Image (cartoon, rainbow, N blue to C red):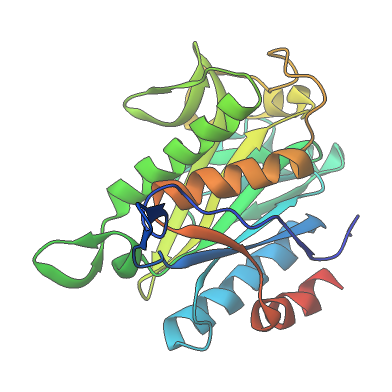
Length: 266
């Protein structure tokens, strides 16, 4: 299912490395190439991530990339989830018209659906966030913090002042979660990513213990008064925020990335 094929977002560069200073141009940062995919079934997006991550690890994809999209209604259960987080069981969720999948990311159960912006970075982590003294290893904790920083920047662009709420991940407004994180690292390359509720029907979350946090609420940009925002409109803001937090420039996808993506988006 899809509402639009791959679309290139505007090119953005952070004001750090690569900017002109006093007539002298410093070394340009590496790029985060991004695509807006419209609406894509979760299973198709998951398979696409795996294909891109394999290509990035093998060196067949020469830059990190970011997939930006929406999903039809789906609940996903991460590696840290528990059956008690789905009180009615998977069949109850399917009866509501949503898919249910057990996936290989961290975290517990969450909902994805229309009106929610989802971003999947495919990043060779040792290049973006190396661990000093540990060649070839990337810092997963710093990566999660970078994703949170990117989400905070996107929310701010929509006029919403979100914050962090340790020890929980994601971004929050008070005790209500606005954006969630669940990641995987395999062969040094990241998969899965983040989701921000833009105009999401929050009633879907009432069927589960979202993110495995009993009593935690959820919210959306729309509920918080951000008018006129859609996942597609927010996508370049999130791309710019994540890229900046990783020290990368943002660029539209090149031909190789489009070729790798197109079978899933067709």
